[in-house]
Image 1 (cartoon, one colour):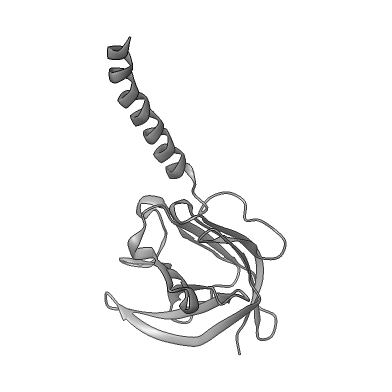
Image 2: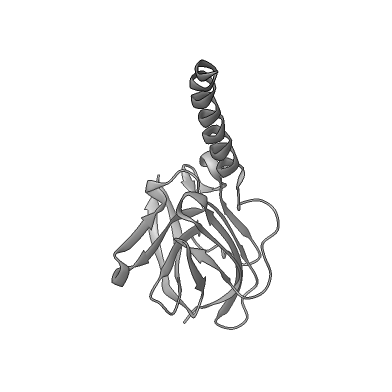
Length: 178
């Protein structure tokens, strides 16, 4: 009987581990419905609700011989945690009315040759010495649905997940363009 447990124990542990990894891989927030209502969820296991949204004025960048407009905005929580996001469009093309995706395994649309629409994201909180970025995880996914601007406001919705970092937020927010 002990021999059976010695053989079955490690196999059982590996099966549990493999099933946990498979479940984490199944979470893809770049697909499906984006939650409605105010933006909320958890970032790094801590409750998050966007208290404010700031926007860096559009800048141009060249990548692969193409010039893009860069949309860089920050979703800030009252505790100082910030979700920092950057998206690009070909110069002169607005993101209005479009959905941008950052999928699992490099599954994301390109704004131009070799240049994904979502250029990056990070979760930061200086007071907690927290920095998590797209470059260090392989289970992140997100989609941003841009509405149509009204004056100097651009409505948007987001669904963002990083299971390995206990992070998932979803909902609506408005980007102040000035």
